[in-house]
Image (cartoon, rainbow, N blue to C red; front, side, top):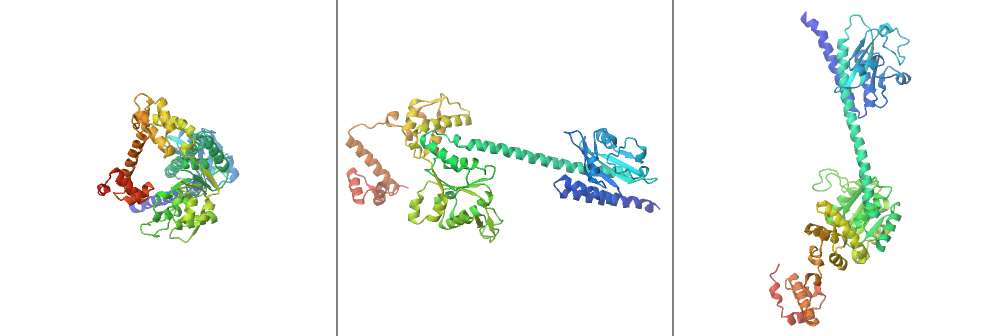
Length: 520
């Protein structure tokens, strides 16, 4: 007997578990709540005998409770189903956070039937159950169900099951709200970073007001809105990458990827994989498929520095990308289309490389569509004080060490130096000087020894011109022999001398090259 009495209870519990499992799968399948709650209501209707059901959510901005999804209601009826907290049964549930049971909706004056879905029914035969949807203690909506009234039926089990389902829906809402907030945060953060990047890399932020740099700014403003391939040329340290940034972030691709690759820093064995990607198993160590820089830069720009260092094989593949806008990954056969603006840079003489046969002339013409030459710092001396002030402020702030000015002798030293390392060398000098300054002023003695003049360092030459030239000549020959480990022929080539003249100079100064053969 006992077993027969427990059998309906066990059967109901199994049925509830199946319902909950099905609803959990439905809620997990879609990232959008609107795509999941409708099927969830359909599952409740199928398994619980529900005639109609709604999921209503509270809109905090408008203060209205609106139907998010429904079963058994038309679009018009869904649109009419709007309440305010405390209005009708649904409004009361949302306001109080407590479930409500209406055995006969015809006997309950608070039941408004605002959707009009029950007008043609005998309302006394319809029961209404409504439970709150909560996140913590906050009521965010309600889950309701209509079912035919049956004598002797206890609504307690239905309320319990609907409350569990409402908790599952609340959890799904919470997760999706968190994901939506994170997406919005990322969109806002991306917009902020893009704004900062545009401000940081606009041409006006490339420090310098010389005539040569104003010409560069004009070229940047002309080429940025276009799709032209740009070749930035100039000595090492002149700021070629900064120009590439300015071109990208002032173009219509500014909100798309900007991918950088230094061709000279990549070994020849991996440069092709880095640029075009590779398929799994393409070579030893290729344990997974990898996208190359051209794929990553799709719809944006790619900046290829030291383009003159590319191998002939890679040059051919790059030429195809520029011509056909397509490529294949290493080890792959699928052709990949790409929409990328190419900006390249080099400090090498490409014309000389073409004559030597190490750089393809057809690739050169493809890259040299819009050349921009960045002048070396020695040709724009008027920019040195501006750059010095900029770097002083930058490194004073970075090191929390205020430096208020640079002394006149120090400025004279900066202006008289030839700057073989260009702006990069100037930046390093100023950073060092800021760290060495002890009285909020950069003095000449804070600058590196390479900038010190004979007068400033007290090491000016004394004596006759002939003896001074002999001393300098002897020092140069000693340095060359040290570098050549005593090999006179190699030292002569380094100094631009013939071996005969080198022998005479060595003999004149009494130098024994054998002394340097063990120096490493």
